[in-house]
Length: 377
Image 1 (cartoon, rainbow, N blue to C red):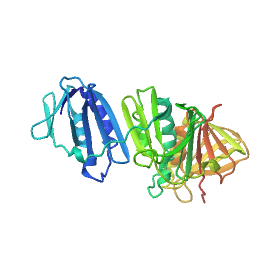
Image 2 (cartoon, rainbow, N blue to C red; image 1 turned 90 degrees about the horizontal axis):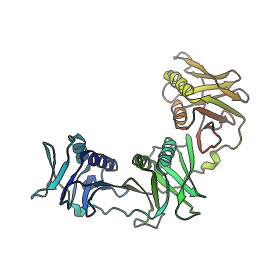
Image 3 (cartoon, rainbow, N blue to C red; image 1 turned 120 degrees about the vertical axis):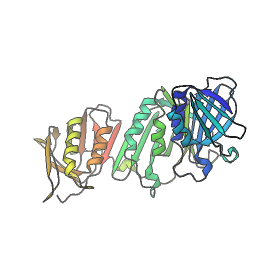
Image 4 (cartoon, one colour; image 1 turned 90 degrees about the vertical axis):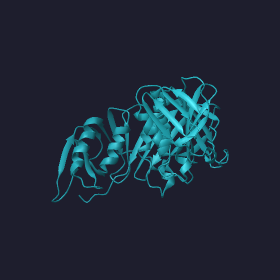
């Protein structure tokens, strides 16, 4: 193998591809990153652990580039990140080791057996396109509600529904629910599909969308790909990610979305969030903050009895009977940070039923549903 590439371009691509490396690889070879030079003057960097693959393309700057090699992905990422701002020259020596030179720095890396490395899955056929910034924002808004308990794998995913020219992303950990809807451009009008994608993978993929105008989405449902499990892929800016779909029955989330409300509050997001943070300082772990809405505004309280106490008022526009409700402060703050508005609208049916947090807007394309907590305080 031999090639030359610009340091910054190579470092960025290596760091991105390394994010897909498994923390605990099932086999040593899966900790590797495959480098392959192609005839079009590009280098591809790829990683794959049978669940998720990542492929990044890097333009080459030197002549006579050729070959392939498999090296430790994390070590390569650490090395390239530390290099000075000079062209990077990489080649294999007569012993099969990879030598990397940049300025006066020189590194030698051991190679891994390429014949033991699995072939990357093909990118599924293109299903449609969506704006890169729009998709990245939507993923960030719903991923906060995805579960982190691996014993409930379906809840660690983000449900993606494609129908009627719209994409709906859904995530829930049973304590809150986030739903975001946005338009896309399907290749075939009327395309309908529902898939469950690991939230962590989808979040990492969103980080690669920066600088791209559009993201191409490819879908292969269960039984339609080589694994038989179904995969989804994204391609943007010369970078491609695929991941296996999750199995499992997803909760019927529509039943958790209230359609009628008895009370509604409108509050400025920044003052509301700052007040929640201050009051929560005296709340012990896993204890809620108490919110009382009434004609005089919102009263926030935390702590009880002989413990530290805190209270603060926040101006709001409130329509409804006086209502007292308790929320996990971290979950409430997640929802406030996710809405794309300076004013939050919080809607209630009762103190013991889920509340819905949205931005004050004519278009309600994002809803954050949070379960109240019973409190003896």
